[in-house]
Image (cartoon, one colour):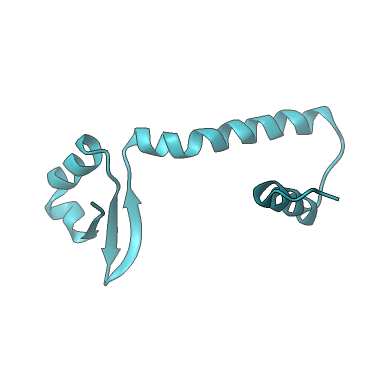
Length: 90
């Protein structure tokens, strides 16, 4: 079940929130004045979300060191969209 709580609960009910995040493995969504402000995750959950991105950025850095070719942002996003939507790049 999705946990949505006011940001004040972070101060007032931290052990409860920590239990939800750490033991139940669920993110907790925090609101301020009725609007979403942040999401709390365990370090493991955060790493699971970002590890692939870090690997791809490292791979891009290595590829950039091996060539002088540089792409414009339009070329990069066109290729990315093509991969996402399964279209062939030009």
